[in-house]
Image (cartoon, rainbow, N blue to C red):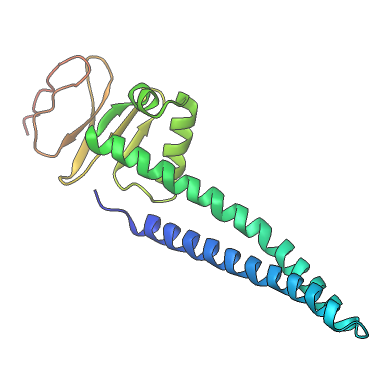
Length: 176
């Protein structure tokens, strides 16, 4: 499974945000240090060191929230990669199976997967909240049919036999 364009964009902007915030914070700290050092050598001139220190502090304070935002986004990327690994092993996992592997609560798994689907990270991922199931579809086109016996929602390849994965009933072909 390849990463989607939405995920790739998210990952690149997160990396740029983190690098930009880090570099800017380092430069602002150098301004603060430079202002402090210049104050030692320019004892008569108070304006230059004060401006450097003030500018450095303001820029640092402005970049700090961006740094934390980048860290939160990085955590989403790490979770995405973990879910992707689990779903690649078994594309038709139950939420309970994912919880067991990830060691998190079912509500967290469902919320994470729904957020990632809405963000476009997973193409072909279906999260069934009621049935507590996560299905990842890759390759062939899929169709959904509702079992006439048990009412289960089944995802099958187009043209395959319509057999219910819940109760085993086979849907009769309709004669036209």
